[in-house]
Image (cartoon, rainbow over all chains, first blue to last red; front, side, top):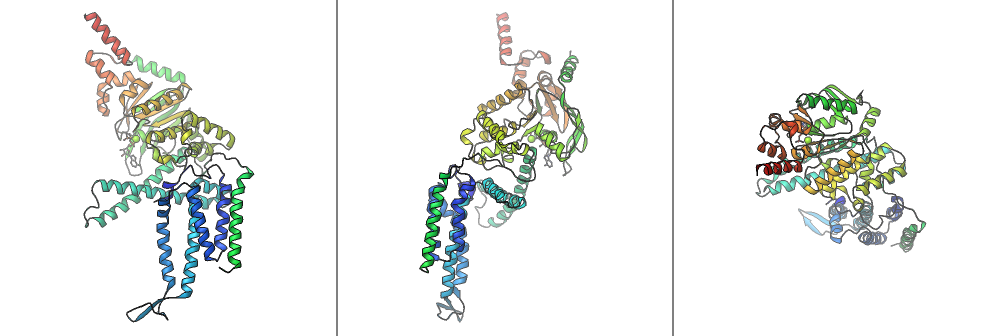
Length: 256
Length: 294
Ligand SMILES: Nc1ncnc2c1ncn2[C@@H]1O[C@H](COP(=O)(O)OP(=O)(O)OP(=O)(O)O)[C@@H](O)[C@H]1O
Ligand SMILES: [Mg+2]
């Protein structure tokens, strides 16, 4: 699963310029970073996902599938934090080693889990409401050095290319009945990986040639569709921001 | 008579002036594969030129040389009489004048949306954003792409991708439009549409160079045909002349066009310049023969 595959070009923020779009996610990101309240983080996570479903027009099933990999990684990380070896209150004992859960660890893990999920959801929000060139454009406006922007764009393109190539090749091999016998899987897979890398490098080179043929300079400059700015566009993000800030203040006030 | 025609052609070419000249150009890939050997070629301005050859004849390589992507290992290229230089500024200028549409659309599409794809070349060349936007809108209209402008080019059909590639090159308004197999994997209707679009560009004074192995298309469409075989120019001239030469065609690994085949079936000794130019001409001849026979 790759973002560009489920990205819907007709998402609801499409008429807004990337700078105005940033008002939707940038404050949320700042708040999620500064908050140390588990409740606030979960609320943020829920809110962002609801907005995502509504704004990006991505389906529920696709969205949940997007979370699979990051959640798996975070859970493993949290699990390690939560475990206490040797524990005072043993949970189980394996080979005379008392294994248990630590209360501090539990607290930390829940904070970690909620905060990372909130941040990841915001990241998905960015990626599902902006194309790569719009993000690059925004970075350029923020005066981020061109080198970083290019690196970012190239990495993104390369991953996309790699993913696309591997998918095509895997499908082609499957059509020729590869991967059917159990013993043949691993060597086939290794061959596939080698072929995918080779092919991706080749594709990247061809793409580069085609860009050169159109006088591409050092940095990628894409010209986007022009978008009108109207002050009324600020109303919704401003109300969201104030509501979220209020929520955070309440959470902090009550020490949640 | 056989001598006369190349001469008259040459004369016409000199009158119009040559856009690009290749002088004994050879190209060897870094892998050691000799793709082109001693190619001498002149592309007259304002013509429709078809570059023909079997798979692996070196068509794509030749086209990339014209755009300055590859530098010949031997020989010289001239644009309007001036030798190619391979520094940044000269290349920029050259590539503005020589637009190339690649064989595989997927290798050409870089931007995340159709709009940005069409604007890509233009924004590399110009700084006036307002003008670029107008230009992009014009070409989106012209190529009937307005509805797709926010779509990702990678999620479209081959025909649509081809149209986008054409639009993105033509919007840069090059003098020479180079298309590598413009009709490859297009359905007949889209192929015809593509050729019509190219034809319209030619009417506006652009020089066209396409590579193809479709002999029927080339016969009906081109003003000048260049026959390549294993990196060498085998034959060159008007379609009737080149396609009337059955031996050269066979040597290049190409078939005769259907019209030529039919005409020769009916009159085996038909000279090259007496070949029918289109279907109507052939049918007229046949019916006339039928009438006199009756
Ligand atoms: N990147 C490359 N590296 C090495 N050799 C190459 C490369 N590209 C092409 N060749 C070789 O150069 C020769 C000419 O290839 P080219 O792509 O120009 O043929 P073509 O006439 O365009 O064929 P087709 O009709 O199949 O597109 C071929 O023998 C090919 O194997
Ligand atoms: Mg080719």
